Image (cartoon, rainbow, N blue to C red; front, side, top):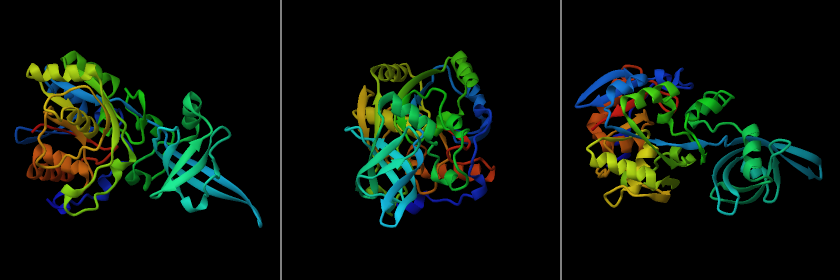
Length: 348
Protein backbone atom coordinates (compact mmCIF):
# COMPACT_ATOMS: atom_id res chain seq x y z
CA UNK A 1 0.00 0.00 0.00
CA UNK A 2 1.79 3.09 -1.28
CA UNK A 3 1.45 6.73 -0.27
CA UNK A 4 0.73 7.63 -3.89
CA UNK A 5 -2.45 5.50 -3.70
CA UNK A 6 -3.99 8.30 -1.60
CA UNK A 7 -2.96 11.23 -3.78
CA UNK A 8 -5.18 13.45 -5.91
CA UNK A 9 -4.99 16.88 -7.52
CA UNK A 10 -6.92 19.58 -5.69
CA UNK A 11 -7.40 23.00 -7.35
CA UNK A 12 -6.19 25.64 -4.90
CA UNK A 13 -9.40 27.63 -5.36
CA UNK A 14 -11.34 24.88 -3.54
CA UNK A 15 -9.47 25.39 -0.23
CA UNK A 16 -11.90 27.24 2.06
CA UNK A 17 -10.52 30.09 4.16
CA UNK A 18 -13.82 30.96 5.89
CA UNK A 19 -16.71 28.70 6.92
CA UNK A 20 -20.23 28.76 5.52
CA UNK A 21 -22.63 31.05 7.34
CA UNK A 22 -24.82 29.93 8.95
CA UNK A 23 -22.80 26.85 9.85
CA UNK A 24 -25.42 24.33 8.74
CA UNK A 25 -25.72 25.90 5.27
CA UNK A 26 -22.54 24.12 4.14
CA UNK A 27 -22.91 21.54 1.39
CA UNK A 28 -23.09 17.84 2.28
CA UNK A 29 -22.02 15.07 -0.07
CA UNK A 30 -24.13 12.04 0.91
CA UNK A 31 -22.56 8.76 -0.21
CA UNK A 32 -24.67 5.68 0.57
CA UNK A 33 -25.81 2.49 -1.19
CA UNK A 34 -23.47 3.08 -4.11
CA UNK A 35 -24.93 6.48 -4.95
CA UNK A 36 -23.86 10.09 -4.39
CA UNK A 37 -26.32 12.88 -3.58
CA UNK A 38 -25.59 16.59 -3.27
CA UNK A 39 -27.30 17.85 -0.13
CA UNK A 40 -27.00 20.57 2.54
CA UNK A 41 -25.91 19.92 6.14
CA UNK A 42 -29.21 21.27 7.47
CA UNK A 43 -30.94 18.38 5.64
CA UNK A 44 -29.37 15.86 8.05
CA UNK A 45 -32.65 15.40 9.98
CA UNK A 46 -34.28 14.18 6.75
CA UNK A 47 -31.32 11.90 5.92
CA UNK A 48 -30.70 10.26 9.29
CA UNK A 49 -32.92 7.68 10.99
CA UNK A 50 -34.51 8.11 14.43
CA UNK A 51 -32.48 5.09 15.58
CA UNK A 52 -29.13 6.69 14.64
CA UNK A 53 -26.64 7.93 17.22
CA UNK A 54 -24.14 10.69 16.44
CA UNK A 55 -20.88 10.64 18.41
CA UNK A 56 -19.44 14.13 18.92
CA UNK A 57 -16.08 15.38 20.17
CA UNK A 58 -16.53 18.03 22.88
CA UNK A 59 -12.87 19.12 23.03
CA UNK A 60 -12.26 22.87 23.21
CA UNK A 61 -9.59 24.53 21.09
CA UNK A 62 -7.26 26.83 23.01
CA UNK A 63 -5.94 30.01 21.32
CA UNK A 64 -2.58 28.30 21.02
CA UNK A 65 -0.74 30.76 18.75
CA UNK A 66 1.13 33.47 20.58
CA UNK A 67 3.25 36.37 19.35
CA UNK A 68 5.79 37.81 21.76
CA UNK A 69 9.19 39.36 22.24
CA UNK A 70 12.48 38.18 23.67
CA UNK A 71 14.45 41.05 25.21
CA UNK A 72 18.19 40.78 25.87
CA UNK A 73 20.90 43.10 27.17
CA UNK A 74 24.19 42.57 25.34
CA UNK A 75 27.52 44.27 24.86
CA UNK A 76 26.01 46.29 22.02
CA UNK A 77 23.06 47.31 24.16
CA UNK A 78 19.51 46.00 24.50
CA UNK A 79 18.04 43.92 21.67
CA UNK A 80 14.55 42.64 20.93
CA UNK A 81 13.53 39.63 18.81
CA UNK A 82 9.97 38.84 17.66
CA UNK A 83 9.03 35.30 18.62
CA UNK A 84 6.09 33.17 17.46
CA UNK A 85 4.91 30.29 19.65
CA UNK A 86 2.46 27.49 18.91
CA UNK A 87 1.48 25.48 21.97
CA UNK A 88 1.34 21.73 21.33
CA UNK A 89 0.36 20.05 24.60
CA UNK A 90 0.65 20.46 28.37
CA UNK A 91 3.14 18.29 30.23
CA UNK A 92 2.53 16.52 33.52
CA UNK A 93 4.82 18.95 35.38
CA UNK A 94 2.81 22.01 34.31
CA UNK A 95 5.10 23.10 31.48
CA UNK A 96 4.06 23.16 27.81
CA UNK A 97 5.58 21.59 24.72
CA UNK A 98 5.62 24.18 21.96
CA UNK A 99 6.98 25.16 18.60
CA UNK A 100 9.03 28.35 18.85
CA UNK A 101 10.03 30.35 15.77
CA UNK A 102 12.84 31.23 15.48
CA UNK A 103 14.01 28.88 18.22
CA UNK A 104 17.63 29.90 17.70
CA UNK A 105 16.78 33.44 18.85
CA UNK A 106 15.93 32.28 22.40
CA UNK A 107 18.39 30.76 24.85
CA UNK A 108 17.45 28.32 27.60
CA UNK A 109 16.41 30.31 30.64
CA UNK A 110 15.29 33.38 28.69
CA UNK A 111 11.79 34.83 28.90
CA UNK A 112 9.33 35.54 26.11
CA UNK A 113 6.75 38.25 26.87
CA UNK A 114 3.35 37.96 25.19
CA UNK A 115 1.33 40.61 27.06
CA UNK A 116 1.39 42.66 30.25
CA UNK A 117 0.06 39.59 32.04
CA UNK A 118 1.52 36.60 30.19
CA UNK A 119 5.12 35.47 29.75
CA UNK A 120 7.01 32.19 29.57
CA UNK A 121 10.51 30.90 30.26
CA UNK A 122 12.16 28.55 27.79
CA UNK A 123 13.35 25.71 30.02
CA UNK A 124 14.70 23.22 27.48
CA UNK A 125 14.56 22.09 23.85
CA UNK A 126 14.46 18.73 22.10
CA UNK A 127 13.79 17.53 18.53
CA UNK A 128 12.97 21.04 17.36
CA UNK A 129 10.42 21.61 20.13
CA UNK A 130 10.70 23.82 23.20
CA UNK A 131 9.52 23.31 26.77
CA UNK A 132 7.96 26.50 28.12
CA UNK A 133 6.89 27.35 31.65
CA UNK A 134 4.36 30.16 31.94
CA UNK A 135 4.17 32.71 34.74
CA UNK A 136 0.50 31.86 35.32
CA UNK A 137 -1.54 28.69 35.84
CA UNK A 138 -5.15 27.60 36.18
CA UNK A 139 -7.89 30.10 35.48
CA UNK A 140 -5.42 33.00 35.41
CA UNK A 141 -3.48 31.30 32.62
CA UNK A 142 -6.68 30.51 30.69
CA UNK A 143 -7.83 34.13 30.91
CA UNK A 144 -4.46 35.58 29.85
CA UNK A 145 -4.16 33.08 26.99
CA UNK A 146 -7.66 33.91 25.77
CA UNK A 147 -6.66 37.57 25.68
CA UNK A 148 -3.22 37.22 24.10
CA UNK A 149 -3.56 34.10 21.94
CA UNK A 150 -4.91 33.52 18.44
CA UNK A 151 -6.62 30.44 17.08
CA UNK A 152 -4.09 27.93 15.65
CA UNK A 153 -5.44 27.85 12.10
CA UNK A 154 -4.25 24.94 9.95
CA UNK A 155 -1.20 25.68 7.78
CA UNK A 156 -3.23 25.72 4.56
CA UNK A 157 -5.41 28.54 5.92
CA UNK A 158 -2.66 30.37 7.82
CA UNK A 159 -0.67 30.55 4.57
CA UNK A 160 -3.51 32.53 2.99
CA UNK A 161 -4.48 34.86 5.86
CA UNK A 162 -3.75 35.48 9.55
CA UNK A 163 -6.15 34.35 12.28
CA UNK A 164 -8.48 37.07 13.51
CA UNK A 165 -11.17 37.62 16.15
CA UNK A 166 -13.82 35.89 14.02
CA UNK A 167 -11.82 32.64 14.13
CA UNK A 168 -12.24 32.47 17.91
CA UNK A 169 -15.92 31.80 17.21
CA UNK A 170 -15.69 30.06 13.84
CA UNK A 171 -12.96 27.56 14.85
CA UNK A 172 -14.87 26.26 17.90
CA UNK A 173 -17.81 23.86 18.09
CA UNK A 174 -20.98 25.00 19.86
CA UNK A 175 -20.53 22.23 22.48
CA UNK A 176 -16.79 22.76 23.15
CA UNK A 177 -16.21 22.37 26.89
CA UNK A 178 -13.01 20.45 27.66
CA UNK A 179 -9.98 22.65 26.90
CA UNK A 180 -6.87 21.09 25.43
CA UNK A 181 -7.05 20.86 21.63
CA UNK A 182 -4.80 22.84 19.30
CA UNK A 183 -6.90 21.94 16.27
CA UNK A 184 -10.67 21.78 15.92
CA UNK A 185 -12.76 18.65 15.33
CA UNK A 186 -13.84 20.33 12.13
CA UNK A 187 -16.74 18.10 11.05
CA UNK A 188 -18.60 19.36 14.13
CA UNK A 189 -18.18 23.00 13.08
CA UNK A 190 -21.20 22.51 10.78
CA UNK A 191 -23.63 22.15 13.69
CA UNK A 192 -25.62 25.09 15.03
CA UNK A 193 -28.41 25.26 17.61
CA UNK A 194 -31.18 25.01 14.99
CA UNK A 195 -29.70 21.86 13.46
CA UNK A 196 -29.24 20.21 16.86
CA UNK A 197 -32.86 20.96 17.76
CA UNK A 198 -34.09 19.51 14.46
CA UNK A 199 -32.03 16.34 14.94
CA UNK A 200 -33.38 15.89 18.47
CA UNK A 201 -36.93 16.36 17.18
CA UNK A 202 -36.22 13.64 14.61
CA UNK A 203 -35.18 11.29 17.42
CA UNK A 204 -31.48 11.17 16.54
CA UNK A 205 -29.45 10.55 19.70
CA UNK A 206 -26.12 12.18 20.54
CA UNK A 207 -23.18 11.06 22.67
CA UNK A 208 -20.14 13.13 23.63
CA UNK A 209 -16.55 11.97 23.88
CA UNK A 210 -13.35 13.98 24.27
CA UNK A 211 -10.22 13.76 22.12
CA UNK A 212 -7.76 16.65 22.33
CA UNK A 213 -6.72 17.11 18.72
CA UNK A 214 -2.98 17.78 18.46
CA UNK A 215 -0.90 19.65 15.93
CA UNK A 216 0.30 16.25 14.72
CA UNK A 217 -2.98 15.95 12.84
CA UNK A 218 -1.37 18.15 10.15
CA UNK A 219 1.93 16.27 9.99
CA UNK A 220 2.62 14.83 6.52
CA UNK A 221 3.15 11.13 5.94
CA UNK A 222 6.81 10.78 4.97
CA UNK A 223 7.06 7.05 4.24
CA UNK A 224 6.12 5.50 0.90
CA UNK A 225 4.93 2.25 2.57
CA UNK A 226 2.04 3.72 4.57
CA UNK A 227 1.83 0.71 6.90
CA UNK A 228 5.13 1.81 8.48
CA UNK A 229 3.87 5.31 9.37
CA UNK A 230 3.88 6.14 13.10
CA UNK A 231 0.88 8.15 14.29
CA UNK A 232 1.14 10.97 16.83
CA UNK A 233 -0.56 10.24 20.15
CA UNK A 234 -3.53 12.26 21.42
CA UNK A 235 -5.31 12.13 24.77
CA UNK A 236 -8.91 11.01 24.77
CA UNK A 237 -11.70 9.80 27.00
CA UNK A 238 -14.85 7.78 26.46
CA UNK A 239 -16.96 8.02 29.61
CA UNK A 240 -19.01 5.14 30.99
CA UNK A 241 -22.14 7.06 29.97
CA UNK A 242 -21.00 7.43 26.36
CA UNK A 243 -19.86 3.80 26.15
CA UNK A 244 -23.21 2.58 27.53
CA UNK A 245 -25.15 4.78 25.07
CA UNK A 246 -23.14 3.56 22.08
CA UNK A 247 -23.45 -0.09 23.19
CA UNK A 248 -27.22 0.31 23.62
CA UNK A 249 -27.59 1.74 20.12
CA UNK A 250 -25.60 -1.17 18.64
CA UNK A 251 -27.65 -3.71 20.60
CA UNK A 252 -30.90 -2.17 19.35
CA UNK A 253 -29.75 -2.34 15.73
CA UNK A 254 -29.19 1.40 15.34
CA UNK A 255 -26.27 3.01 13.52
CA UNK A 256 -23.34 4.64 15.32
CA UNK A 257 -22.11 7.60 13.26
CA UNK A 258 -19.10 9.50 14.58
CA UNK A 259 -18.92 13.13 13.51
CA UNK A 260 -15.30 13.60 12.52
CA UNK A 261 -12.27 11.36 12.29
CA UNK A 262 -11.26 12.25 15.86
CA UNK A 263 -14.48 10.83 17.32
CA UNK A 264 -14.14 7.76 15.10
CA UNK A 265 -10.53 7.08 16.12
CA UNK A 266 -11.45 7.45 19.77
CA UNK A 267 -14.43 5.07 19.83
CA UNK A 268 -12.50 2.50 17.83
CA UNK A 269 -9.65 2.82 20.36
CA UNK A 270 -12.19 2.19 23.13
CA UNK A 271 -13.60 -0.83 21.27
CA UNK A 272 -10.35 -2.57 20.37
CA UNK A 273 -11.46 -5.60 22.36
CA UNK A 274 -14.50 -5.99 20.11
CA UNK A 275 -17.06 -4.07 22.19
CA UNK A 276 -17.15 -0.46 23.31
CA UNK A 277 -16.06 0.16 26.92
CA UNK A 278 -15.10 3.20 29.04
CA UNK A 279 -11.61 4.29 28.09
CA UNK A 280 -9.11 7.03 28.88
CA UNK A 281 -5.52 7.57 27.76
CA UNK A 282 -3.29 8.37 24.80
CA UNK A 283 -4.26 6.85 21.48
CA UNK A 284 -2.07 6.55 18.41
CA UNK A 285 -4.47 4.30 16.53
CA UNK A 286 -3.73 4.32 12.78
CA UNK A 287 -6.65 3.34 10.55
CA UNK A 288 -5.89 2.40 6.96
CA UNK A 289 -7.41 -0.07 4.45
CA UNK A 290 -7.74 -3.50 6.01
CA UNK A 291 -8.78 -2.14 9.41
CA UNK A 292 -11.76 -3.93 11.00
CA UNK A 293 -14.23 -1.44 12.45
CA UNK A 294 -15.87 -2.54 15.71
CA UNK A 295 -18.56 0.09 16.32
CA UNK A 296 -18.50 2.59 13.44
CA UNK A 297 -21.35 2.33 10.91
CA UNK A 298 -20.62 5.53 8.97
CA UNK A 299 -18.88 8.87 9.25
CA UNK A 300 -19.63 12.56 8.83
CA UNK A 301 -16.38 14.27 7.85
CA UNK A 302 -14.90 17.14 5.87
CA UNK A 303 -12.75 16.64 2.76
CA UNK A 304 -9.15 15.79 3.55
CA UNK A 305 -5.65 16.53 2.30
CA UNK A 306 -4.07 14.35 -0.38
CA UNK A 307 -1.72 11.67 0.98
CA UNK A 308 -2.91 12.24 4.56
CA UNK A 309 -3.69 9.66 7.25
CA UNK A 310 -7.30 10.90 7.12
CA UNK A 311 -7.55 9.91 3.45
CA UNK A 312 -6.37 6.48 4.53
CA UNK A 313 -9.04 6.38 7.25
CA UNK A 314 -11.94 7.19 4.93
CA UNK A 315 -10.53 4.69 2.41
CA UNK A 316 -10.55 2.03 5.13
CA UNK A 317 -14.22 2.78 5.78
CA UNK A 318 -15.48 3.15 2.22
CA UNK A 319 -12.92 1.37 0.02
CA UNK A 320 -10.21 3.08 -2.02
CA UNK A 321 -12.05 3.02 -5.35
CA UNK A 322 -15.21 4.39 -3.77
CA UNK A 323 -13.29 7.26 -2.13
CA UNK A 324 -11.67 8.15 -5.46
CA UNK A 325 -15.15 8.32 -6.99
CA UNK A 326 -16.44 10.50 -4.11
CA UNK A 327 -13.51 12.91 -4.26
CA UNK A 328 -13.69 13.19 -8.05
CA UNK A 329 -17.37 14.13 -7.68
CA UNK A 330 -16.55 16.67 -4.96
CA UNK A 331 -13.86 18.35 -7.05
CA UNK A 332 -15.95 18.37 -10.22
CA UNK A 333 -18.86 19.92 -8.32
CA UNK A 334 -16.64 22.44 -6.55
CA UNK A 335 -17.14 21.38 -2.95
CA UNK A 336 -15.05 23.45 -0.53
CA UNK A 337 -12.19 21.51 1.08
CA UNK A 338 -10.46 21.13 4.45
CA UNK A 339 -11.17 22.59 7.91
CA UNK A 340 -13.55 25.40 6.93
CA UNK A 341 -14.94 23.53 3.94
CA UNK A 342 -18.02 21.47 3.16
CA UNK A 343 -18.88 18.08 4.64
CA UNK A 344 -19.69 14.53 3.63
CA UNK A 345 -21.79 11.73 5.10
CA UNK A 346 -20.15 8.42 4.26
CA UNK A 347 -22.15 5.22 4.81
CA UNK A 348 -20.34 2.04 3.65
